[in-house]
Image (tube, rainbow, N blue to C red; front, side, top):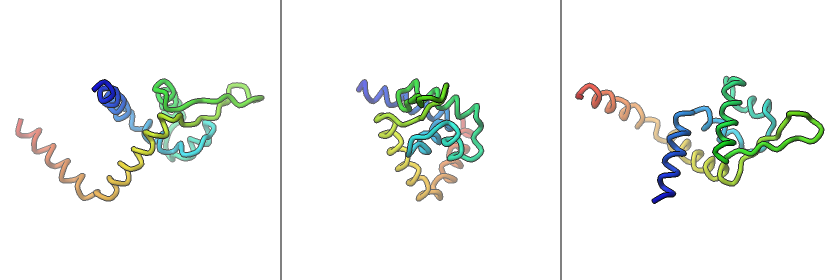
Length: 116
């Protein structure tokens, strides 16, 4: 069960940082900071920097220095990051296919909270 605990901790960390999920999904191909930012409309530079730092610490993104360009990196998914991004894409597709379920789940949660 240690692997299950590790994944649970990772998913909890990701879901408290929704922008990190967006970054993972946008990283289909490697890109420099500005390129990744243009793939996610509305995401601030500060949030992207924080997400890339978090994903790097988690071993999901790897910055690769670009020769000749001081302090510039090409960001790419690691094998671990690519595996997780693939799973998140499937979940995202399922969520899109079942949009009608989300409102009923939200209503149930509100009703359960009111009953406490």
